[in-house]
Length: 95
Ligand code: FES
Image (tube, rainbow, N blue to C red):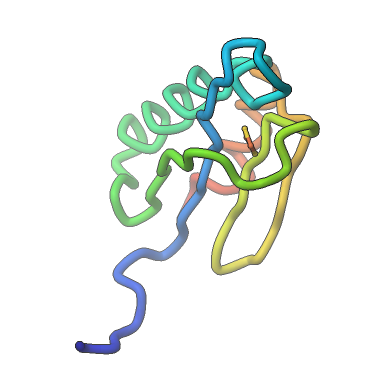
């Protein structure tokens, strides 16, 4: 096993789990679309994959979704909605 520094400047993990109404989940609030839009912005700004928007399949806080976890800042956003995407992009998808 090798141990190395992370190859990314930043990783933005967006929960895209969708329990389809069987229990609360980030899918109730369009987690997958939040992920898709953030990923597209990173690509459009030519910052992907240096700033990597990744899908997470449940971050363990399902009742407060959409949940987003950001490293290396060690920040957690909960209750994210599609209308928050521009703010998140301006804050985290930049050089
Ligand atoms: S479904 Fe998103 S944290 Fe569990």
